[in-house]
Length: 219
Image (cartoon, rainbow, N blue to C red; front, side, top):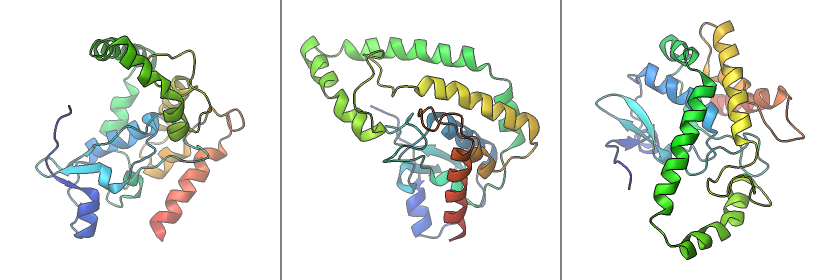
C-alpha cells in the first residue's frame, strides 16, 4: 500500500499542452539529484505526477531502479532531464546536498532497509518467501540484464555493484557542486558513473548519455 499523490501525470500535462512555468525549482532540483543516485530505468512521463498546489513533481513508479546507467537493455531514463523549465540546479538543493555525509546516510538507509525487509518477510511463510526468491533470476535479467542473482544479497534485491556505484556517484556530485556554482541538468548527467567492468572509470559514459538527452531535447 502506498500513498496517493493527487494531480496529473506529466504525460497528461504534455498532451494537454499545460505549462510547467511555476515548478518548485528547489524540489525538482532535489529530484534530479536523487535520480543520479537511484538510476531510474523507467522514468517516462506517465510515471511522474505534478502536485498542483505545491508545484512539486513526484515519481510514482520506482520499481526499475539502481541498475547500471548504461545497461545493454535499458539505460538511465528520466523525462525530468528534458524539462526546459529547469535551466539549472537550485543553489539551495546543491548546498543542501553538500551538507550530507554519504557514509552515514547510506549506512543508515541500508540498516532501515534490513529492518523493513524483515517486517515484510514476516508476512509470508518460508515456502512463499522461497518461491519469491526463486524468481530472483528472472527479475534480475529483466531489470539489470544480470545472468544470476548476487549471492551476497539474498534478501534485498540489489544488482551487483549498486552500492559501490551509489557511493562513487555521491563523490562525483559533490565534486561538481563544489566546482560549478550553477550546474545544469546536463552537467549532472555528465557525472554518471558505471561499475560495469568494461566501463568503470570511463568519463565518456556520462557525456554520452548527456549528449543523447541534449539531442532528444533539441529534436
